Image 1: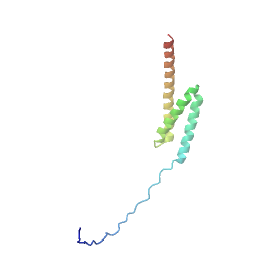
Image 2 (image 1 turned 135 degrees about the horizontal axis):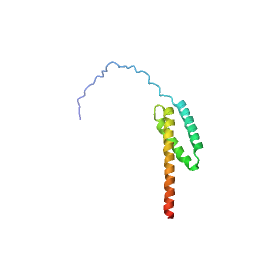
Image 3 (image 1 turned 30 degrees about the horizontal axis):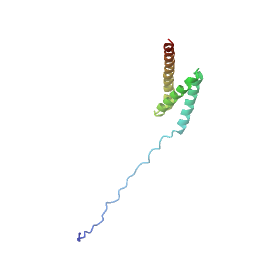
Image 4 (image 1 turned 135 degrees about the vertical axis):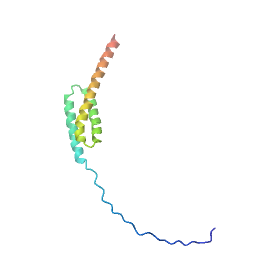
Length: 112
């Protein structure tokens, strides 16, 4: 056990103050979100109206959601979404036609 006591003196440096500018407000995207959803619904409704078969509805909706997610992550979602949606829809329609062709060929092979 230590019997010797050391006295400590509390001395602090002069108080330092910093001037911090206020943080810039985050971009308010609520209005943009409403416009984006309206655009998405409009384009999706047009594409679903043009789709002849009911089996295309789910893949086209999926394409719209995929394009929406990618576009929303960009800086200009209202500009990017229509083009992305068009590309994804074209890809989905090609894929569905290809699957139908493969199915028809496989049925013919199974019968023969």
